[in-house]
Amino acid sequence: MDFVIIFGPQAVGKTAVGRQLEKITSLKLFHNHQTIDLLSLYFEFGSKSFNELCWLFRSKIIEAAAKDKVNLIFTMVWALQNPTDKIFIDEIANFYEKEGGRVSFVELESPLAVREVRNHSEERKVWKPGLANKVESVIKEWEKIHKLNSDGDFFYPERHIKINNQNLSPLEVAEIIKNRFQLK
Image 1 (tube, rainbow, N blue to C red):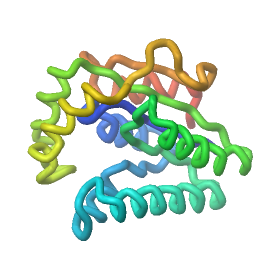
Image 2: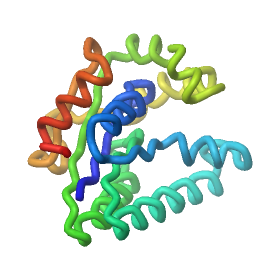
Image 3: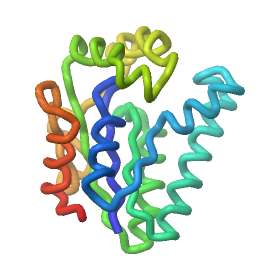
């Protein structure tokens, strides 16, 4: 059983890569906007209730998937310097590990200028309607205040791959991930 966590900054291509990886493996995609889009209907993005429910929903869905032996891809923006994010990652990884699953970490990176263009792509408008304008300021703000990519200092180097996907298609990245972690 496999659990693949794809992380990186906003608009780096996590969902696009996840969708392609889902097509070429037995894994199912659970992308971060599935909870964000639901909760945004009722709560202000980043509010206490929004954040608490977002982490709770994600945690419970991933826990149930692990118990039911679902091969899963999960995407998120991970502020690597934030201890709370690391605690969450360890918690969800543990769900799979205690069920005998294998956890792999995929880190995507692309320059800010590339991500700003991707933020306004047609594909993003279809999959994440109304998001581009909301994320525009967040992309720049988070770039300044959070560590969104590692510098050779990732927590679990033996289970990690870092891919600069600036000049790669989502399918090319998915193939790299599939081969690196021998996903079926």
